[in-house]
Length: 251
Ligand SMILES: [Zn+2]
Image (cartoon, rainbow, N blue to C red; front, side, top):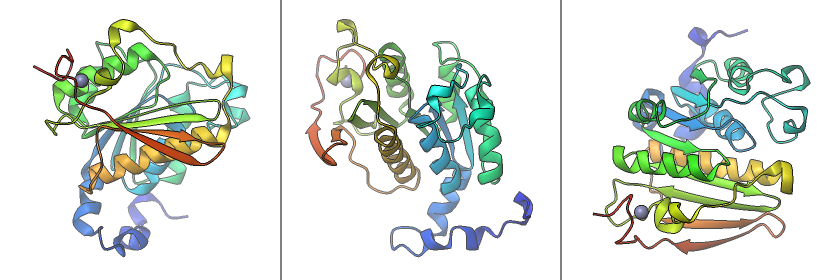
């Protein structure tokens, strides 16, 4: 069995480098990058899997939850033997076998105003896979302040949303331009409303897709809210106007 030191990286990523948009330089950017993934649920699992296998050098993966049996249809890095284990520790073990070139830093704790700033500072791209309205706003605020691109997704039942916030683009709106943090929101609780497993997987893959493209310097449309209907496999898009009164990204 090949150990990480014996893996032929040129062959490993040879199909990606065949693409006209991808070259050794963009692969080297991925290899040198650190990505912060917040959340290890139905979004976080496919995100971490595709980022790690896709060539990202280092993942910091944060989640304070443990694996529950009801998670397994969506959270495809965990098996029945992982039930009760901290999600990011079980996830790191799975990724070490599948993507040994990727260093996974498992943070078995919830994201807070105390731990997030340093994590965000060290990352090139942040991926929000939480299902908490307040945490999402906190991550958005800190990413705007640190000028770090952020890939947000959410999913409930058969519906998903995807938004890339890129504070490096002056005209691009942020999550708070779209949803006023002061109005509060309803957390998309899969335990209460249900979620279709592959709908979560599709949204997670779209997040990983956008994160990889950001890291490789490929064009990504920030400030476009994608609304995905998993029953019809249909995507609508809404351009988020930058709110001149937004307390997070304006002024
Ligand atoms: Zn804003």
